[in-house]
Length: 294
Image 1 (tube, one colour):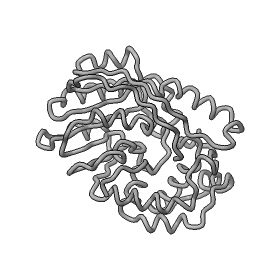
Image 2 (tube, helix red, strand yellow):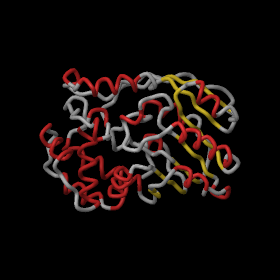
Image 3 (spheres, rainbow, N blue to C red):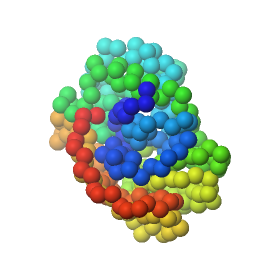
């Protein structure tokens, strides 16, 4: 499969609503790499390259990708008959103890599809499903199958971004879409793997010393610190887009601390800068994307 599909996951900070803006600036390439794959909205929205690599430091996320790629029907079977219930969410979060990789993927997938805004940091992973806004369990199987088709032949890795980027070669004719955690957001509340200020500096340094090997597009929150870190790139574009955060029928009842987390993150969503080590002719017009079920 090479057609555009939606990401299989709900993912805090994902680029679903900015995907058209991003795709307008991706240059021709033979190898496509995402060092911070997350929900993979851009990979799933674009045509596959000859070689593709999705990398993420979260082992539960990459395990789920691998199971969907290699054993989709097994995952579908484990989820067969499941219902989206607050009690089942609590069971998977607090009681279910996976004994193998398939069960790890089963737990991760169920929680991701039923948690508020796809937040998978267990400290802040709360029930957040509503029939009106969320993908129903009876549709999970089809979602897994089409995702598996898109992932065929895709390399899925679980390593530090610096190791991955340092090992890219000029011969790969690679394009990197780089979507790190926001610089100024409380991102440690959203994700299972923390990203420090030192990591942001380390990312800028590894991209700078390897910039002659590939072309890249980075999405970041628009802050003076980020602009200073990347004052060496060829292009910086300010971008905005309209979006609706994933919500549920019982959003107003969501725990107060969860709402606080999302509100803090909202300041950095929808207004960002695109950083590129190549020149673009002109900045494309702003694009408004309507809300879609996820």
